[in-house]
Length: 516
Figure 1 (cartoon, rainbow, N blue to C red):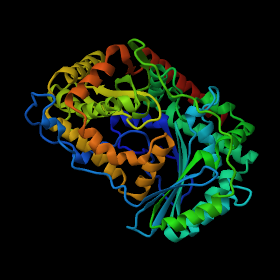
Figure 2: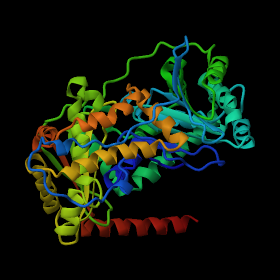
Figure 3: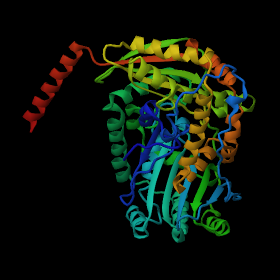
Figure 4: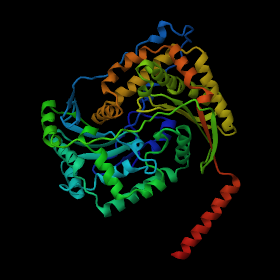
């Protein structure tokens, strides 16, 4: 099992979030874990590092309207919908004789009951344990026999499954996915086994990872009213309480053609694909789907700061502003979301970006710093900053230095090349993310699953070009304020606590030795 990323290459802050926001599972030994999806814009380091140019003294001059000169290729895209509600998106890509098949269910950890965190991820594991038609062993043999690769992933907003086959074996992938959409068997022994596997994942990814534990607590504090405050894998106590009948009911409720998007990218003919999809999925019955919980989070609740003692080697600073995504901002305020995305890149878009150049290299206050902002998200999110102060620098000093740079962002002139780099980074990141068939499929599926049309990516360069420096500063003044900020100081254990922990460990080891 491995944790992987989705639509972006998240830097320091984003990497921290992975353990709690996405669970990706390798279910077949044939392939290696892919770069899973996620929900934020890709920041491409290869496109970063341009030298600073002269400051643009006029915030709304033509210089800050420079075009990215990049575009998204939407050619070869076809969309269909079956009578049972299944949406199909086919993207032709004839560079290699293979086809990527992905099915996305619009259900994830945000949909789970308050006391049953982890249902979606546990069901994802059970989906590989056989159907009434194809046993688990036969499923794995079929994947291996025909040179396939398969995997699955669970996020806040969706659960996805995929197969990569030679193009002529694409119907096999459709047959397997249609079969397990409705014919999954729930064996007691397999459930017990996978239940333990998932709990062990929880222990490895979070319970035994001090920074992940801190981040989990941080999200609960920063997103108290949103289901995205919880981790995708769920608290251990809730995981332990999940029963097999509850898992069956979850499957019955959400796994249906009218709650799924089928994405196929590769060396395929759209007409033939549609015929095969109708053959395998056409007779499946739709379900009466429940209404999904809202994922909004009221901000501006007042400044919050806490201290979290964890078994970390060095102190870590976590800062998060409550902000809207493109979805929650709405059409009337979408420019605010685009402006926040560019603000994030101005602060942390490579070696020449402000936080890196000023706080690490010039002032020597930090050893690491990273930011993340999820523009393409189903609900409200966080403008997240994570930093590690240099030895001799306190967390409070690091925090004040970062806040100072954020204040400068609101008022000081922004160089034309900073804006140009930010726009270029965003678009090129998305372009590179779609270089592979898997990347294209993930982009389409993730956006469709959160209620966005993936074709909006074609409009993205123009949307970003329409954002002025004054828009970036206005969005920063509105959202990046103290009244909207949550801060956590993650500190190593005190000396006494460390001694007690070491003593307890020694006693435990002695006890184990005696029992052998």
